[in-house]
Amino acid sequence: MKVLVATEKPFAAVAVNGIREAVEKGGLELALLEKYTEKAQLLDAVKDADAIIIRSDKVDAEVLDAAKQLKIVVRAGAGYDNVDLEAATAHNVCVMNTPGQNSNAVAELALGLMVYGARNLYNGTSGTELKGKKLGIHAYGNVGRNVARIAKGFGMEIYAYDAFCPSEVIEADGVKPVASAEELYKTCQYISLHIPATKETKNSIGHALLSSMPKGAVLINTARKEVINEPELVKVLEERPDFKYLTDIMPGNHAELAEKFAARYFSTPKKMGAQTAEANINAGIAAANQIVDFLKNGNRKFQVNK
Ligand code: NAD
Image (tube, rainbow, N blue to C red; front, side, top):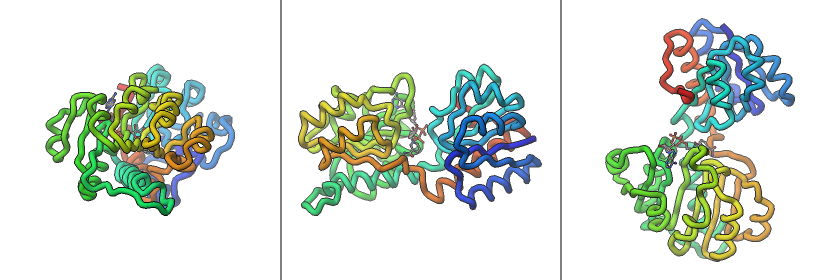
């Protein structure tokens, strides 16, 4: 059976070696489609694939139609909004992600953005410290937990809201659970966003929540740009000269934000939260191991289209 690694942006060589080792040890064959530039190349490569490992690559109904033997797609990473889950289910294809493998990398970047914000984007002026400030973690999943762990070292007072994670789990980490997103934003000067982009969360971070934040508000986004209501974010930045927005996902209105709010807005040039050697290797190898375990033992633990 053939496992295809289809990556517009390839894995590091050391990760590919680890993937190959895991795949071959499982008695499977590895095929590589790296740095492809046309969708047609992907459509051709998936024809005889039983399993596919992807990164931010799009797997839509057309790709699934072309992949007649496909049984499983694994997104090496956490967010899987690049895969059409309904179409995959209709094609009887199992979709998985590799949760937790890049969480520390993203969390470290979130804290880095917080320091950058507190020190006025390193512009040479006197800033503030994170110690003693209230941090609100919006969604207490794999990344959120790592943010809490690191922020404790900075001496921050940490709160969290998660729609599904029980408050006892949050409390057990020495973090204060709150009952709603509204309460979190009202309470915390710093908010670090870790919600996935879903029907419920898209465009959900807007004027009502952001304008309720305390003085000196800083919003850190290492989640997805789709969760932000961009026109309403502009309104908040216009109304509140104390509000800062720092993101790892360049917004649709980046040019407007960069021009109007240069001193209080920053975006990484491209999403780089998970771009560390460690995360790359961990996620790629985890994807390969999950495929072997699924094809040999039927393990569906990380399936996301249940
Ligand atoms: P995760 O699945 O471990 O955690 C997500 C958490 O969100 C879960 O605890 C879930 O209960 C909670 N949640 C879901 N819907 C919610 C809602 N409506 N309100 C409140 N909480 C809700 O995911 P993770 O690994 O922590 O990653 C979080 C997000 O970060 C991903 O979905 C992805 O979009 C993004 N991400 C970005 C990068 C990057 O490079 N910047 C890398 C990895 C992940």
